[in-house]
Length: 259
Image 1 (spheres, rainbow, N blue to C red):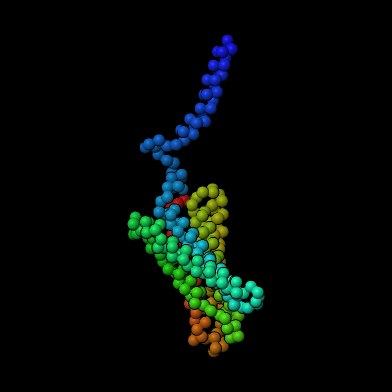
Image 2 (cartoon, rainbow, N blue to C red):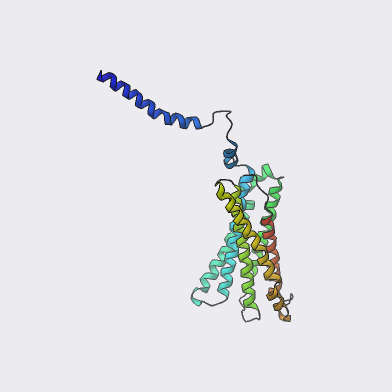
């Protein structure tokens, strides 16, 4: 009798531990079985999702460039002799690395592979327009040198450039929040991410407009030495226009259909 009981218990244990394995096995779609649309959209790796990631990398590169430029300008104010040289070096390094990241995203093997299949996709054209606009900002900031702080208005221009760079960082971060929410992976949190991202983008554009056309800039330009004939003043407006183009493109980023 005991032997029979032991046999029955063994069979019962085998069945009990088999059920979870069977349940797990059953969750995997068999050949020809349709995958749930929500799961397919999030993990299929379609063009829209891949482009999301390219744009996020490019936006991160833009943020590095803007932050690096601000560090370089802060060092050029020469207020902390012990740290200025290191800060300038690191700032310039960030500009260089941010620029290279954008170039890598636009021209690397991943993008080359995408181009073979999606070259005619409007989103591809948009992506390269955005990248070219970001690289134009990077080129301007790489060439911007304000070491001669004795010239009138130079400190004020430093601060204006920093504000424009900050607006670029806000726009890049805001666009990334929108794309993250657009991926549709976090339920109700997605809506919060998208709304906050839109707020950041909305605030970025008037910040640049105020710096380049506001009362302070108009007052500064009344001085003949700070007219558009001044190379730094001309570069400042180029910087503002290039930054506005990037922010405008980020505000118009097409939906990738990943949500």
